[in-house]
Length: 184
Image (cartoon, rainbow, N blue to C red; front, side, top):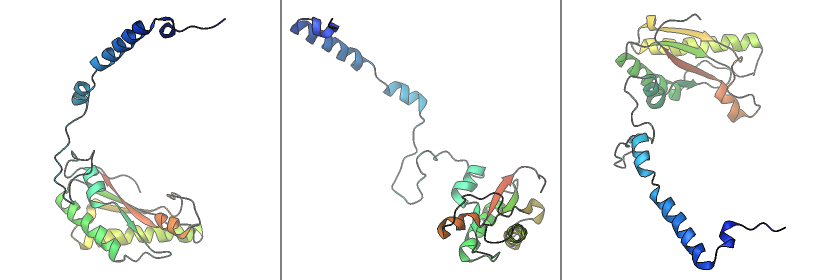
């Protein structure tokens, strides 16, 4: 037995009328009114370098999102080193300016290492990195009572890998904002 669809059973002119009715029905459904209710209007873009990225127009100054997006919370190190290079200092300079302007925030500096040595060596190195970042922020005027440092060794790798460009992601200090002091 053959299946016959409704459209194929109709004569030619009736088929056209049904198709036109379906098209008109679909055209009557418009989503622009719904979209206007669901999506906030975007801030006007003027083509400047500092225009907010789409979706981040409403980041509140002084918020954790502001710190992460506009300042940066990661400081990177070379292998087996806790020495701050020029790039690390530039990141920490921006953090110090932001933290001095937003004194309500406390900061837990979390140090990390890759797997280029023993667990004990990497734990000590990660602590030295966190301490170095903390000392630098204090030297830039951040109240030391707002900061604490903790090294985690290579327990919390961003990526487990052997490639040099990948391992560098694990040699870092992450500045995490807090509203109250937590345990080390």
